Length: 369
Ligand SMILES: [Zn+2]
Ligand SMILES: [Zn+2]
Image (cartoon, rainbow, N blue to C red; front, side, top):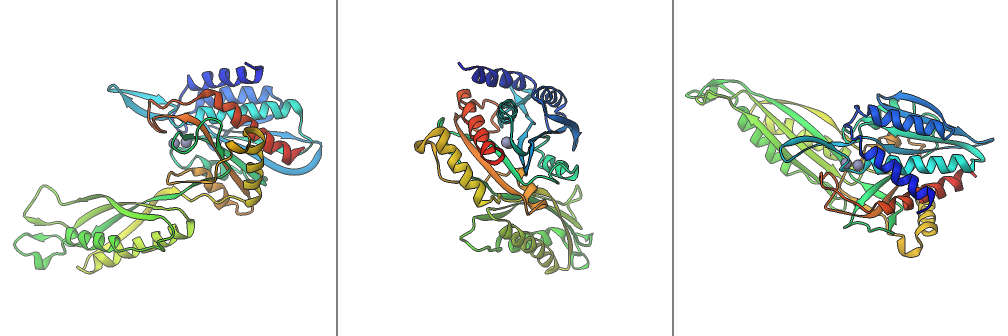
């Protein structure tokens, strides 16, 4: 085992042993801050909550290239006990980004700036937004991310140069009618009738079928303890997904219209609110091309997969939405991961992490040397 390989395993063991949920990555953040400081970076902690920004400047002018890793673990219940587990592999992402940063710093960068972003709360879907609000992306020209992939998508020795996450949002709606005695429904406006009309209208929404997209009601609450009273309030929740941001924009408008117009058919009114979500991936062709070259160089032709489309979401994609001039890229790393992400029993081939480290090093090397 090379010393680099040994360091990867030690780093992973340390991070894996301190899983913390989003915005509570206190130990993880302190541990990473110390390591990245020791590697020679100028470090700012407490960015956007528990986030870290670490900066290493080259001698010559050049682009600002950021490597981003998410730090949070997930809360699970295992055998009836509440536990926190790194079931999305974010500990491996921090391991790969930290090791690549250490290697790049040791070898030295010639031009531009290498910026390391350890981001909180990816799973809560607004850790990236907090980093943006803190100004962490203001001077960044290129940002790179990486994520382990389940075995069905990629195996050890394989990687994709572009992992296309979809967009997903949650919408909530409140429908207001008019209560009345059950014997006199004509004097009221039944909020359940309104919700039913709204649901029918939602289910009749269509988006260009070449773009995968769905919109469905995932919760409906209405009526109370008194069963001979016309209910005046209903609440709906919707899960919306689309593989492209324009399709999501259309879906959000159509869903709002369907709810308001549906409710209006029986004389009710409705308000809607988008409760958060993530945009779809948008990558720069230059960065995808660079990632392709890096994967070929590290894993050979056989290791280079096509771009992968996944319905899962990633808050990383808020970066480009907030700063459209940013060139983004995102590697999906094969590592024989079973049974799946977000499963507390998730396992992967730890020997694959060095592949991720070397792909990131190769890309940054091309950009900053
Ligand atoms: Zn996850
Ligand atoms: Zn994840």
